[in-house]
Image (cartoon, rainbow, N blue to C red; front, top):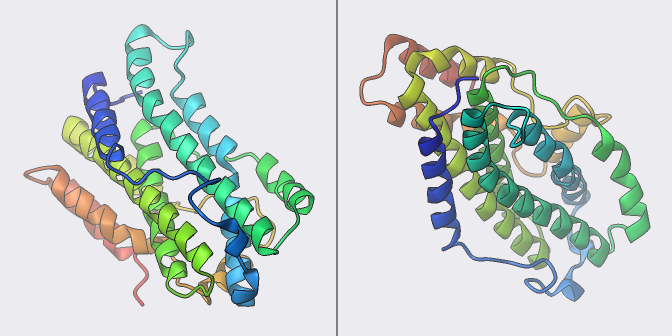
Length: 276
């Protein structure tokens, strides 16, 4: 595996934690007055969107295992790779804790607002939660390029959903979630930039492959995913290619003198964007 030099990964992790230190911390139990949550203020489409994003966020154990399996911090790897993976693990566990907070906040909203009962919701999350989440990647940069798009697309959707929902409590939750996703995107963009600087054209084709085959998490495991995705897009624009503009900016800023292969990747990503 052609990973980043360990010090480069350590620096990216340090920059993330430095930024996170200035972020507004929040606790699901105390940050929101859940007694004010009222799903009666939501349209049918907005309620469906909340159900959808709850399923996506609640799959955190699957996402977390993807990184721990592909970047193991144990005796299965040589010491040099362990050093790199251990530095990445500092971020991974923090990222997992923040994403799990998102899952807890959305499930809490559903039960507090009257959308669902506790037991009913827990059972509804079992089947999608147990589904295997996998990415067919062989190059380490692909895991970060994928997450870069996914985190930015999620952030954008939360912002757009927040703009139309009628419940101030849900609006507050979506604001907090989108801020976290923006910071996660920043880390992934930092790492992808590091790969481009360290490995140059060697990572162009792996990144291109991510975009060529991109699917949002659980697209292949949630029954009726695409019908559901189209339904919630009627409530607030839902299109992961909205994130490609931000990937292009990362690509253009990563190196001082882009090669022709680098320029071709930028053109390819731009060609994959959905034009409204």
